Image 1: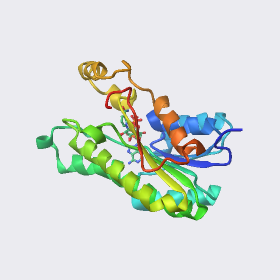
Image 2 (image 1 turned 60 degrees about the vertical axis):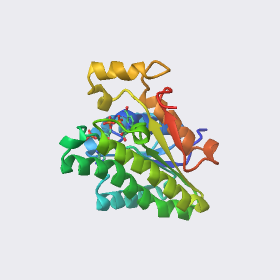
Image 3 (image 1 turned 90 degrees about the vertical axis):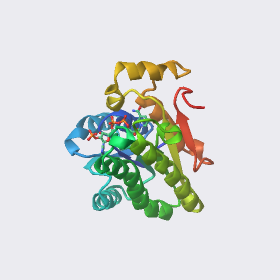
Image 4 (image 1 turned 135 degrees about the vertical axis):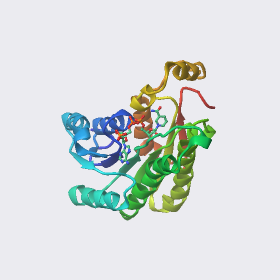
Length: 247
Ligand code: NAP
């Protein structure tokens, strides 16, 4: 018996990295999964892994910044499974450059995926979760949304926005048994962070008290906690998972 037997979880940006680890961890705890990413063929590995764990899985191509696509996705999940218990807003992008060089397009693209995408999925699942009188929404923010970072003003603003969205929706949905929390990962090994130079990586490591980078699985474990009954009295919070990088 898993903690999530009979539960249905939706994870965005699930093709790789943190999203894939989250989907697999929730499946290993018994959840059926809806895994979303920009293209369905990118979801093959995640889908096979979840199926291998003996869970039902529905892979869907969804651009999280597209309102109609998000609403259609949630409608399909409800048609297929009849409920949504866990929503993990994980899809995210970076387009880093210094403020004075940042184009309108780089600003808009990052805000569209990271912040608007989280808003759209939260709005779409809120009604069915309130009707069920239960649900957990977990938004993947970032340590950068707490402290800012040179060269990432668009990303930092989007993640700070995700934190404010988390707290506001937690207040709105609490009376219906729906909890909303955020996770602020620090430096997690993934394709996004593999793209950084060795120099930047060394600098970051020097500022992490636990002396190592995190793994997607470290974030997946935090998601499982916040989604579970173990966190029944936790809402509107930001859980930092960062090796002590920011205290
Ligand atoms: P990742 O490896 O780049 O994975 C993100 C996934 O989201 C990719 O498959 C990506 O597809 C997909 N995606 C991008 N835009 C999308 C859209 N519009 N609709 C649907 N899916 C979309 O990133 P990650 O490192 O696992 O990060 C996951 C989340 O954690 C992000 O929100 C990120 O900001 C956050 N985070 C990561 C770190 C870290 O150190 N890795 C730290 C703090 C926070 P593409 O292949 O097209 O990009």
